[in-house]
Length: 530
Ligand code: TRP
Image 1 (cartoon, rainbow, N blue to C red):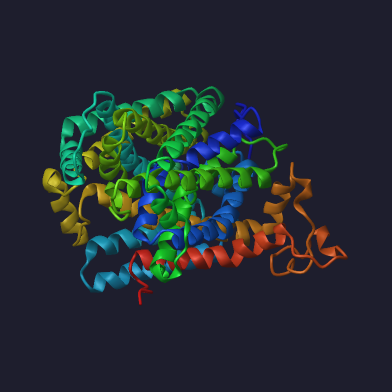
Image 2 (cartoon, rainbow, N blue to C red):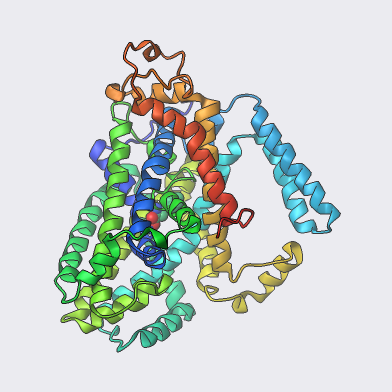
């Protein structure tokens, strides 16, 4: 595996790694998306379901990613390559299945999909599990292309707050301003460019003096800003209505659909499913305790999401707005809220700065996945990879930036896609979002869990996890089911369920099934709505 002469850079210690990984996890997902999906799905009860998804699905999968990365010391593609068996029956079966589906579609004349599936089937047959890594690197590309557009908006809004332009009397005015702003090509592309530039500059500097150093500076700042905003929000008259909405669970507002939204978001929020945590894991030293690191990262990510809700809902309710404004909640409702309280422009500035910092430490993790692949597998210099792919993502993202609302500015591209695939999503921006969030991430998470549980094997993964975390516990009762029956710990005289065995069971059965159901639901092949 380590046939490369260069020494891989590592985090300076546990804290640097935890802050960097938490920086990746904490992002627009926590501060922009979590509050609005909580608002749309009824508040408190949804928060509880989300916490459950984080604990039982998110945390186990994150341990898998860290272990895969640290064991192989590679990017996602290299990691899967290093651990894949020569032939995998499962991979062959999936390959044949996809191939047959492609041939079947040929009968119905949808040749675009059919060619795509046949090619995919052949690739799966040929490359097997390595393709999961390839999908991860591709997802890094597609996610960052739209993520950096939204992150760019935060830069625009920082500027607007600083120059006191966010003085809206009502949400309708704020919405009009926002719609106009995101459709303005100069603003949208300019801000998107600035954001990508910041990402490239940090990734260019490398693991320790780039990613770790900036995470160590930016994450505490983020924490302080959000604390200040919570205090401001909670001390507004009428804030308690928001707290009540946010923290009182009403399970009648929850249905199967909300549960699946919570599960999907748990994945996105923890940066799982595309190998970002495999890549960050590959920079951890063997002395580090993966288990407690996972708990810290998951804990910090959840804490910040909960805090974001506590900063936003009391303010929104105090000023008499509803919580269900959707994606516009933080860009439209909040500026209006801030405008009504003293020193509003200052609070708005602070809030959008918070959002930008959160997005930045996530953006660098996405760019790092692509960069690490070209550095490890293609022998590129880090500098060259960071700049080249930063630029490539900027270009793809520019297409997203000018097409957030519809295809009107990309009619040529739409015509081509329509010809090949028969349908297109609402816009190019939506297409990238949909492709990554609904396809790449859940499939990636599914295969990462299956691979760790059944191909690499929980026993081998646990051997890796045990480095630096000897107290991981001994196993008896469930060790057979968890695939640990040859492990020495199997001889423990005390019949206890341990975290190790629970983890194995989750990884082998529960996480894959849960993710599969969520996936089938989001792509519309399974309808659980009452
Ligand atoms: N977790 C980040 C957020 O909450 C987004 C993100 C960064 C991400 N890296 C990722 C999502 C990798 C999925 C995979 O905003």
